[in-house]
Image (cartoon, rainbow, N blue to C red; front, side):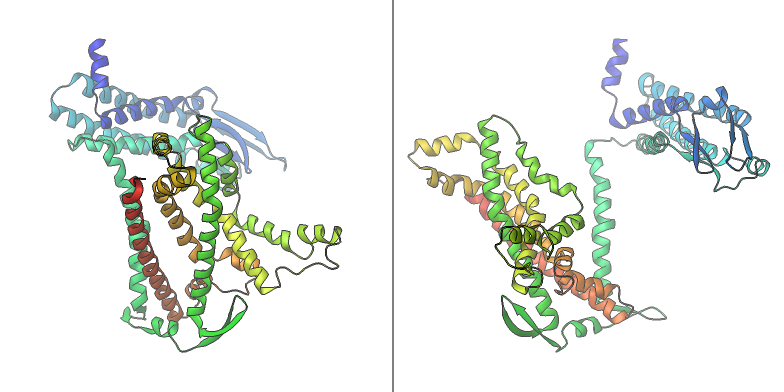
Length: 479
């Protein structure tokens, strides 16, 4: 037994995963994995074993018809096939890993176990598809939409675990050594599929337009964006004439800058107070921090409409002002251009505030208290300690917070669109209107605008990254 325990502790990761998958494959025979539905009503949940013990279903429909089903014959067949496969997988996965020292034989064992996992998946799929036969539906006068079998959560889990077990067996068959770095590969694949490829597609669509026979190079999208079409835009009460899409970019940039500044002004003192309180109470975190994270759990659209209702003509604020006789008639906050602009920035600040608090708090809470004590011992006051020690050391959190707020708020258009009722165009809904347009030229203009925005974001991130390096270098400034 000691030798077996020692071998289990020395078992490689892929072998552990393979053995766990084999065990789960066996146990799943006794776990309910199939749900039978008649007329969209759940009737019974079956495992392979329960198909033998209680194989019959009898139910009477509201129409007076009767439905009778018997799964005994099919259940016996699938139970025998599945249990043979599962027992063989458990036996071989453990025996080859624990009692065989020859690496070549272990690889052969991994190949056999992988084949058994695939066979177990195939048997599961066949069970799902063969549970309800055509003769059953015909004899009960039913259709596939009215009589069917669905897979339970445990069925989904079993499919996933068997797939992972098959992959682990493949690693063993190829003689590879699995380590935790391999778990980074799915994330790399995710980045390539959902980040790199879409960016390459945007780049391609910015310069090439679809034709009947293929694609042709064109700069029509650039011509749309940089056409000499001007509009009269209002910024801070001042009316100026600007190129159409440049004015849209300036408005989006204005929203993003003020949202970032507002979040920083509110978040830094809050994060500092919360971190100080957590350190004083000798806790690693603060429950108060949850109060600022909770709004993130609510849908952004619902929060925005709640703010709009608050400032509306018949909203809470106007009701309060009129009840206190502070105003004679409701104030049209959302109709006034300047006030509506301020409210939009306030709502965006409220929406993005947690993204600024969390990185700053996580950095400040990790500052060594001994540095603060050393600062006080050297004669520095609270203000000097804050400006020379705490602020420089917390700059990485500040830079991360700025990145997490500025980048999304630059392209965020839901809040301005709802608060101003679509009267203010931002770069986000401009791209949306271009991409959804039927014109191929405007589609290309949308991709060009996305590309230009991406370049601007990359430049901004480069500047912030350099600032972050400077902050790290200045984090150990002496007093």
